[in-house]
Amino acid sequence: MTPPDQLGAAEKAAMLLHAADIAEEREAVMRNTWSDIEFHGGEMSNAELVERLERQFAASAAPAVRSLRAEKSS
Image (tube, rainbow, N blue to C red):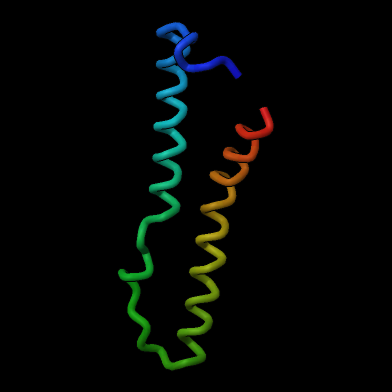
């Protein structure tokens, strides 16, 4: 990888835009949806709700993780 001080203006701009995309994806993944949901359905119902939210979080995090892994390998 070329050191940042040896990059041209267009390359630096592309890197900054890519970093902004990664940051935006991370923010989307880390949004706190948990606080917007009420857990008043009893223990069993709440456990099912938590399981569903965990699956939803994992599904939303997967694309960002794949993107980061791809960046590290290139």
